[in-house]
Length: 316
Image 1 (cartoon, helix red, strand yellow):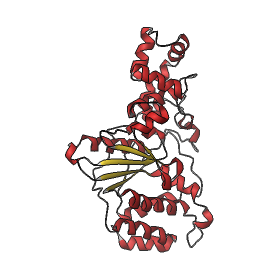
Image 2 (cartoon, rainbow, N blue to C red; image 1 turned 180 degrees about the vertical axis):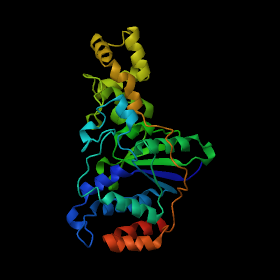
Image 3 (cartoon, helix red, strand yellow; image 1 turned 30 degrees about the horizontal axis):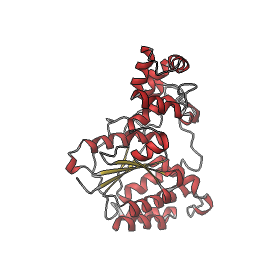
Image 4 (cartoon, rainbow, N blue to C red; image 1 turned 90 degrees about the horizontal axis):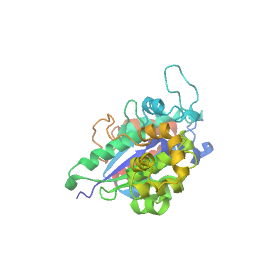
């Protein structure tokens, strides 16, 4: 089995965290423009490269933060985050005024450093990550690298797979103290036995932060217990339809009343394993792809120290 490691960054999750974690007062360009998210994200990448020693690295990107196929299935999906609905679109994400201009700078910095930034038309970064994980798992075992997914989004716990060496590095406590989520952690924290079981539990439970209603009256503990008892969401629904005595009358009623939601919830909750993500060389660059652009970005935006930290980390 390969001793390589693929590090997949849920980039938006990280730059939002950086934006709120680094004060604008200490993250400004020479002209006064806030660059706190840029600096924070670059510092995160430097630390991750030093601490986790990946051999490959991809910054995964939201080409569509609210894909039409998910909105068509559940119209409330992320609806509360829409800032300016546009006719014929699923809406524009509400982003802090001083964060939005920093996102293109982040993209420029990644390009100059030579860190691949991958998205897929009509898909979220979660789907890009799911697809890259599926591709890695499909490789022959002797060639397969371990995969670490860095995110603040619990939805990606569904990808955890000890046998395939896929973990999630959860940023709930910050980059300096990542919560390493493997199967043991899923069992301990959520009482589910696998990544797919987590997705099934999440569909039943719902997630207000994503506009997913879940099954009213069925919380996380009950959802996990039902998945454990019947093996999967499909097993829970089969038990509902067959009158299985393992369900209480109240549970069966609640599951029946939520039938329309449960029919489409898996499509929304599960990440796509087959998004049209480009094939690129994702090996960790030893030197920047465009050194002149790195210098120009450092001078223009006043982010020289952060860029230097990443360059030094890559050179190790």
